[in-house]
Amino acid sequence: MYARNVTAQTSPDVLDEAIQLWKESVAPTTKEQKGFKGAYLFVDRSTGKIRSIGLWETQADLLASVGWNQEQVGKFASFFNTPATIELYEVAAEA
Image 1: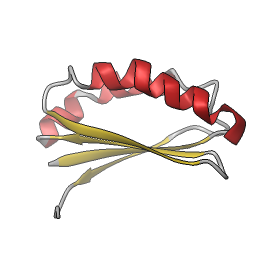
Image 2: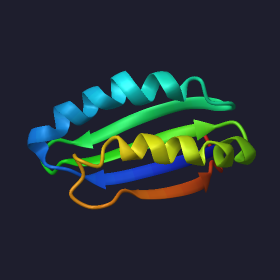
Image 3: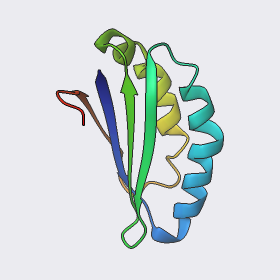
Image 4: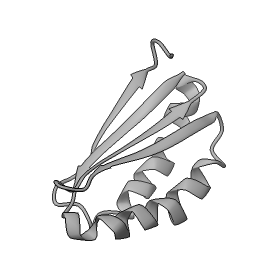
């Protein structure tokens, strides 16, 4: 399994709007991506830090979704104080 980690910083006062956008726009289209296994959105309400982790069946599936992911991250540009950081990982262990 493979994971994409997207981390960004926003203002705490717009966090609820960003969460709503993720739920209404990102989550439904994520489920349509080949090899999609699951996604999580984490937030720190005191700092405005956002982290989204998506899981993919194969590395090829993860890489095939790069363009889709860039489009999704772009939807949040007005919320972010700095550009989002995107990292790709192999999931080495699971409990």
